[in-house]
Image (tube, rainbow, N blue to C red):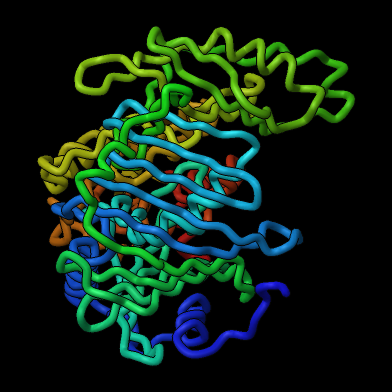
Length: 498
């Protein structure tokens, strides 16, 4: 019998959140938004401290759970998961599924081992162990600088669903659903649901264990169909005799370090585009190409696993991987091997490599600068050079701000138009300095980056949401060029009259 079921109770009520139904209206003023954001951060911080067996300060424990799960259109499979836990970096996890057994160990932050065959570890970890053990694992991505919202909901019980405002602005090549779900919490801070655009995880049958809430039953639904169900059958303190379980089997294989969102990202120091033969382009080869790699201690990359992309491009892409170099990745001052995925995407210079989830360079926003003083300097320059002024509002936390800087680097013709007609002023907006007194004279700003065009005397000509200029994970050259042309000196008066 399949796991496809109708939704009821809290599952049905929480699913409403995914389509945006809320009891309270969204805040309308800056003060209300700031208050709502502070409340949302406080609710999430409290939830992180009291939900799940592996929160900070937890004592060692042993957990066992039965589960059912369905992968794709295949049959429902049943299994068990056992975990012996002594700390965030010291644990053992063993799955049984059909006739398979898979075991992984974490000895410390940098030493991981496994005994595995053809086991679907990623899916089982994501749908079974992770919701049971670290149900708010994505909360580390909700940085204090990110504005958040609170949506009170009725879901069998009253819950507050907290989420990041406009999460797409804080991601890089990763689905924002995965990094920034909605967390729905009851009045006591207990997690009742995790919601994305197509996935709902519900938490029920809570018990108090070591002064924190642990859900004994966790269901995962995708597009309204239950794909997994987990039920804890044992939740107990770790017995001294069981500590031996934490020692890896001599046959276990060492695994590379996998950085989390809170870890420093890898830094690529040298890369060359693949030499793509002309016949490959003619034959329809197109990107992106995804290459799983191990970054070795000396910074060289070694391809591992299955390469995904156009088959005709794989050979030249793998050759390019051998020429990529990274800064050695250091943990506590020592280099370690790191698992990453290099993504080759097509650009004017061929298939350019980036690191999936890698960080962008700082964009130059400085919370310590006074934008009013910067504007005075810009006005003097604009009057002397007969240019307009472009305020670029954002912060170093904003990935789309980094995209914009990269866009002008990759499109020198558009950058030339910017430099010929505008004096650029970067205005910081961050948790430590909103610069609201300066910015409120131009527009109510919710999205970042945000562009403000002023004439040479500082008079407002145009305030523009950059969402309209976006294309994919970047900006549209034609739209950006048209925007700059429309509001440059000599054209702005005509644009304002339209």
